[in-house]
Length: 191
Image (cartoon, rainbow, N blue to C red; front, side, top):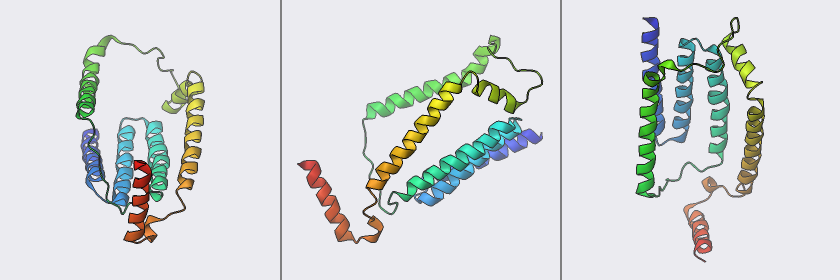
């Protein structure tokens, strides 16, 4: 009974936080509610007894990813209006169809997979953290290290690219100076 009440409570809170994230126009509110939603997702792991995954959810997603979002948000002028481009409608329909097929596959997998067995069954006497560690640092050691190197390269590239744009601050300029910069960019694009 406790698990069901906790599940529905955290499900409601998670959906509410992500709804606010999507619908708000304030970047700081969106960032805060996204972090809260990720913390509420970690509650599901704790309810299911996967303490390691719950802690990783808080540390990695809520801590590291949200710090990355906050760091990236500092480089963008959030006071400007965002002008969206309407893309190709066939791409939207195609991606929606793929998403619908994936949702059907996810919900039908437990029905179909009653006879499937794991290649690596659970080791007796080892907890959740030890099992994840054994698999991660034996079978998946090389992909783990490659992912770490790719993240390091992406972080350095992001810092380099953001450093090139640090010479101008749109928040300190008046409207005429911003318009002159945009006109200059449009001249470069058209020529």
